[in-house]
Length: 436
Image 1 (tube, rainbow, N blue to C red):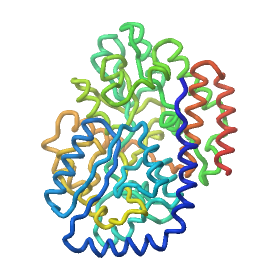
Image 2 (cartoon, one colour; image 1 turned 30 degrees about the vertical axis):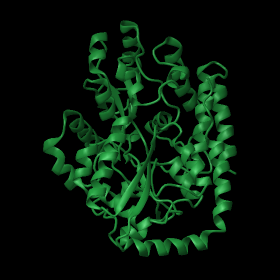
Image 3 (tube, one colour; image 1 turned 60 degrees about the vertical axis):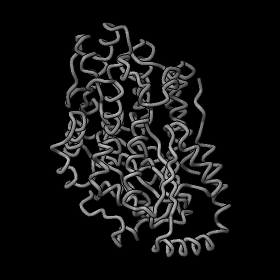
Image 4 (cartoon, rainbow, N blue to C red; image 1 turned 90 degrees about the vertical axis):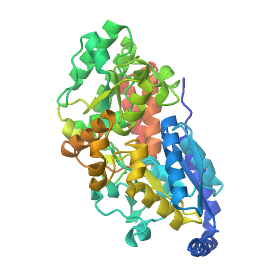
């Protein structure tokens, strides 16, 4: 089954929106200035706000919106939310109509850079400098993840990291060894195959060719992209061959599902680990709470496998809040973002769903009241803070490159290409995309 290729759609829409918006830039700026002046009064202001996520995130976010509206009765926030699938396609369509929401949940890396590269995101620097958005005490490394060319285009919602999430009960039932922060890829494969053979189920979710291959490279001392974003950051295609061979072997043996199974998953509630159909799932730490809640039992987490996993691991913003250049209510949108980042009640409602709080004083204040799951996530982020290296930058065209990698990986998994052919084809396509 082939996945719908979203990236060309996005690129076409971005091209159209640039030409549509360029002629209106002066009038929009003037209009925005008038609207910002109005916001100083007491008139009712309506903000549109978009995000993706699970049902629990939707419920939590609505509760946060309700709290903000209670404290700011002149503001009405209209929610627009979906699952992750289709979110950026929807945003691209709204961009084409010059109708992006005032507050946008954004993803670090490829999509954030793509929107910023097309001039669609407002520079929030002035709101940080004048204190409308208070980021004192926030890690510079985390803040840099929302900065491009000296402009602040995204405010992080919280700290996040890739995690190896595992079902301890399943592993123990299968007689497999539990992972720890020093485990290797060989340990992972041994445990995964043990679960599959003993319990007649999947051992792990399919490894992603995006996030997981990036980690696989970093753990071996390489990067996915070179420093100036004009090419890949590794020269030996055997690295991708090894990753694809590992993934394909897991699928062929039945220890991991193929893309046909993965494409049926529409949200966290459908994940294999939630239903006891896989013992491992490598994903972002902020999703552990939703997975645990959906599973109805405790899940555990540790560092991803590898002999040099400290070199591979990195902290990133769970996601970011951005404001589009087209918004007529930038200042009021900035005020809500400040509320989200600095109000402990927000994190009491949402927990670590959008990452561990950015500020130490909020983390300290929450420490004594954390659930068992939240404590595990907080402790995990502290561990990764000590055992990680700086995050790598992605070029604006990286979204298209990653889509090409996913498409090629699917062909390899189903035997339409060998891993060697796939690695060679990926380098060819990546080069063509990055030198445009």
